[in-house]
Amino acid sequence: MKKTLIILCLAILSTTTVFAKEPVSGYRFKHYMHEIFKNYRNANISIEMRDYDLAEVHTRHLLENLSQIPNFTKDLRADGINLDEAFLLTTINGLRTDVTELRKAIKAKDAGKMKKLQPKLLQSCIGCHTEANLKWLFRLPMSKNLFEEYMHEIGDNYAMAEQLLASNDIDEAEDYIKIANQYLTLLEKIAPYEGPSGVILDRKRFVNEIGKAQGFALLVLDDFKEKRAIDLTALKKPLNNVCVACHEPAMLK
Image (tube, rainbow, N blue to C red; front, side, top):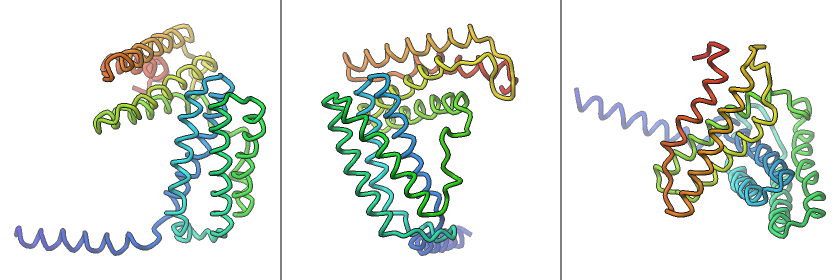
C-alpha cells in the first residue's frame, strides 16, 4: 500500500512539474500588475501626507512587482489575451525608469519633480489597458468601496508582517506595520456612520478603537528602533477590536 502511495505521489509531482512549464493562467500577471497600481496609489497618498519614508517603501515594493511581470507574460495566453509582449516590456522598462526617478525625487523631497512624475506613471497603466482593449476595466475613481478595502488592507498587511517575522525578516516586517498603520489613518479620515450594506456604525466607538490601534502600532515601531525586535502580540487585540467595531453591528462575527 505504501509503495503504491509513493508511486502515485511521484506521478502527481511529475505531472505538476510538466504542466508548470506551460502557461497556466493570467492570474499571477494580473496580480502583480494590480499590485503595481496599488503601490503607486499608496505612494501618492504618502506623498500627499508628506510621509516620504513610507512613500519610498511603496515605490520599492512597486519596483519589486515590476521585476516579476516578465516571468508571467506568456500566462496571458491561457486567458485568451494576446498582448503585444514587446510593447509591454518596453512599457515596463519605461515605468521602471520613471519609478527610479520618482524615488530620487522623494529622497530629495523635490515636490515639483514628484508632481510631474506621478501622473506619468499612471499613463503607463492606462496605456497598457488601452493596448489590450480593456479600457472598461480601468476607471478612476475605482468603484470598490474604499472603507471595506482599507479595513481589509489593515489585516492583510498585519498578516504579512507576521509572516516576515516568522522568517526573521524584521526590517521588512517593520515596513508592513507602517503600511497597516497608514491604512488606519486613512480609515479614520473616512470612517462613516454607515458601514457595509448600510449598517449603522457607532462612529465614536469605531474611531476610538482606531486611535488605540494606532497608538499600539507606534509603540511596537518605537520598541523595534530600541531593541531591534518586534512583538506583534500587543497589537493583535487592538486591531481585532477595530474589526469587531465594524463586524459586530453588521452581525458578521
